[in-house]
Amino acid sequence: MSLTLEIEDQRWRRPRGLTARLKKAVRAALAEAGGDDAADLTVLLTTDKRVKTLNHDFRSKDKPTNVLSFPSEEEGYLGDIAIAYGVTAKEAKAEGKTLIDHTTHLTVHGVLHLLGYDHVTPRLAKVMEPMETRILATLKIADPYETK
Image: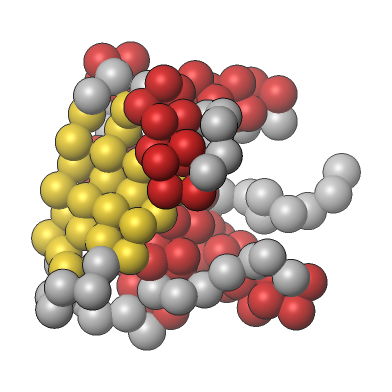
Protein backbone atom coordinates (compact mmCIF):
# COMPACT_ATOMS: atom_id res chain seq x y z
CA MET A 1 0.00 0.00 0.00
CA SER A 2 1.27 3.39 -0.93
CA LEU A 3 -0.40 6.37 0.70
CA THR A 4 0.27 9.80 -0.73
CA LEU A 5 -0.54 12.42 1.86
CA GLU A 6 -0.99 15.94 0.51
CA ILE A 7 -1.28 18.76 3.04
CA GLU A 8 -2.77 21.96 1.64
CA ASP A 9 -3.93 23.50 4.91
CA GLN A 10 -0.93 24.02 7.19
CA ARG A 11 -3.08 23.58 10.31
CA TRP A 12 -3.00 19.85 9.52
CA ARG A 13 0.74 19.86 10.34
CA ARG A 14 0.09 20.66 14.04
CA PRO A 15 -1.19 17.31 15.35
CA ARG A 16 1.83 15.15 16.22
CA GLY A 17 1.69 11.64 14.80
CA LEU A 18 -1.14 12.30 12.36
CA THR A 19 0.67 10.90 9.31
CA ALA A 20 1.57 7.64 11.06
CA ARG A 21 -1.98 7.28 12.39
CA LEU A 22 -3.53 7.78 8.96
CA LYS A 23 -1.23 5.16 7.42
CA LYS A 24 -2.30 2.69 10.12
CA ALA A 25 -5.94 3.59 9.50
CA VAL A 26 -5.66 2.93 5.77
CA ARG A 27 -3.93 -0.43 6.35
CA ALA A 28 -6.52 -1.46 8.94
CA ALA A 29 -9.43 -0.50 6.68
CA LEU A 30 -7.99 -2.40 3.73
CA ALA A 31 -7.37 -5.47 5.91
CA GLU A 32 -10.88 -5.50 7.41
CA ALA A 33 -12.69 -4.79 4.15
CA GLY A 34 -10.67 -7.18 2.02
CA GLY A 35 -9.13 -4.42 -0.08
CA ASP A 36 -5.97 -4.82 -2.09
CA ASP A 37 -3.15 -4.02 0.33
CA ALA A 38 -0.95 -3.17 -2.67
CA ALA A 39 -3.35 -0.45 -3.86
CA ASP A 40 -2.31 3.18 -3.89
CA LEU A 41 -4.42 6.09 -2.71
CA THR A 42 -4.16 9.76 -1.87
CA VAL A 43 -5.44 11.62 1.18
CA LEU A 44 -5.71 15.37 0.74
CA LEU A 45 -5.78 17.31 4.02
CA THR A 46 -7.18 20.63 2.96
CA THR A 47 -9.40 23.60 3.70
CA ASP A 48 -13.16 23.86 4.00
CA LYS A 49 -13.11 26.10 0.94
CA ARG A 50 -11.41 23.43 -1.21
CA VAL A 51 -13.78 20.71 0.00
CA LYS A 52 -16.75 23.00 -0.62
CA THR A 53 -15.57 23.45 -4.22
CA LEU A 54 -15.10 19.69 -4.68
CA ASN A 55 -18.51 19.00 -3.11
CA HIS A 56 -20.10 21.53 -5.45
CA ASP A 57 -18.31 20.32 -8.57
CA PHE A 58 -18.78 16.59 -8.03
CA ARG A 59 -21.91 16.29 -5.88
CA SER A 60 -23.79 19.53 -6.67
CA LYS A 61 -23.82 20.42 -2.96
CA ASP A 62 -22.71 23.98 -2.27
CA LYS A 63 -21.27 23.48 1.22
CA PRO A 64 -18.19 22.02 2.83
CA THR A 65 -18.36 18.57 4.38
CA ASN A 66 -15.91 16.63 6.52
CA VAL A 67 -14.74 14.00 4.02
CA LEU A 68 -15.16 13.23 0.34
CA SER A 69 -14.07 10.08 -1.49
CA PHE A 70 -13.35 9.74 -5.19
CA PRO A 71 -12.93 6.10 -6.26
CA SER A 72 -10.60 5.46 -9.17
CA GLU A 73 -11.11 3.14 -12.09
CA GLU A 74 -7.35 3.00 -12.68
CA GLU A 75 -5.82 -0.44 -12.01
CA GLY A 76 -3.85 -0.41 -8.75
CA TYR A 77 -5.06 3.05 -7.72
CA LEU A 78 -7.88 3.01 -5.18
CA GLY A 79 -8.73 6.72 -5.37
CA ASP A 80 -8.62 10.02 -3.51
CA ILE A 81 -9.95 11.18 -0.16
CA ALA A 82 -10.26 14.87 0.78
CA ILE A 83 -10.71 15.97 4.41
CA ALA A 84 -11.63 19.54 5.42
CA TYR A 85 -9.78 20.95 8.42
CA GLY A 86 -12.39 23.40 9.72
CA VAL A 87 -15.37 21.05 9.55
CA THR A 88 -13.36 18.19 11.04
CA ALA A 89 -11.94 20.28 13.89
CA LYS A 90 -15.37 21.71 14.71
CA GLU A 91 -16.98 18.24 14.75
CA ALA A 92 -14.18 16.81 16.90
CA LYS A 93 -14.57 19.58 19.46
CA ALA A 94 -18.39 19.30 19.51
CA GLU A 95 -18.18 15.52 19.98
CA GLY A 96 -15.42 15.62 22.61
CA LYS A 97 -12.91 13.80 20.40
CA THR A 98 -9.32 14.55 19.55
CA LEU A 99 -8.66 15.91 16.08
CA ILE A 100 -6.41 12.92 15.35
CA ASP A 101 -9.06 10.37 16.38
CA HIS A 102 -11.78 12.07 14.34
CA THR A 103 -9.52 12.43 11.30
CA THR A 104 -8.58 8.76 11.63
CA HIS A 105 -12.27 7.84 11.63
CA LEU A 106 -12.91 9.98 8.55
CA THR A 107 -9.96 8.34 6.79
CA VAL A 108 -11.33 4.86 7.54
CA HIS A 109 -14.76 6.05 6.39
CA GLY A 110 -13.26 7.40 3.17
CA VAL A 111 -11.32 4.21 2.43
CA LEU A 112 -14.49 2.15 2.85
CA HIS A 113 -16.25 4.43 0.36
CA LEU A 114 -13.36 3.90 -2.07
CA LEU A 115 -13.94 0.17 -1.68
CA GLY A 116 -17.63 0.56 -2.57
CA TYR A 117 -19.25 0.64 0.87
CA ASP A 118 -21.96 3.19 1.56
CA HIS A 119 -24.39 4.27 4.26
CA VAL A 120 -27.11 6.03 2.26
CA THR A 121 -29.76 3.56 3.40
CA PRO A 122 -30.24 1.91 6.80
CA ARG A 123 -29.51 -1.50 5.21
CA LEU A 124 -26.18 -0.33 3.80
CA ALA A 125 -25.29 1.50 7.02
CA LYS A 126 -25.81 -1.76 8.96
CA VAL A 127 -22.85 -3.15 7.02
CA MET A 128 -20.56 -0.13 6.81
CA GLU A 129 -20.88 1.35 10.30
CA PRO A 130 -20.06 -1.84 12.26
CA MET A 131 -17.10 -2.34 9.95
CA GLU A 132 -15.86 1.16 10.80
CA THR A 133 -16.33 0.41 14.50
CA ARG A 134 -14.28 -2.80 14.25
CA ILE A 135 -11.49 -1.05 12.36
CA LEU A 136 -11.40 1.84 14.82
CA ALA A 137 -11.31 -0.59 17.75
CA THR A 138 -8.07 -2.05 16.36
CA LEU A 139 -6.70 1.51 16.44
CA LYS A 140 -7.99 2.02 20.00
CA ILE A 141 -10.62 4.57 18.99
CA ALA A 142 -14.09 4.48 20.56
CA ASP A 143 -17.19 3.58 18.57
CA PRO A 144 -18.22 6.80 16.79
CA TYR A 145 -21.80 5.54 16.40
CA GLU A 146 -22.37 4.75 20.07
CA THR A 147 -25.04 7.02 21.49
CA LYS A 148 -24.26 8.57 24.82
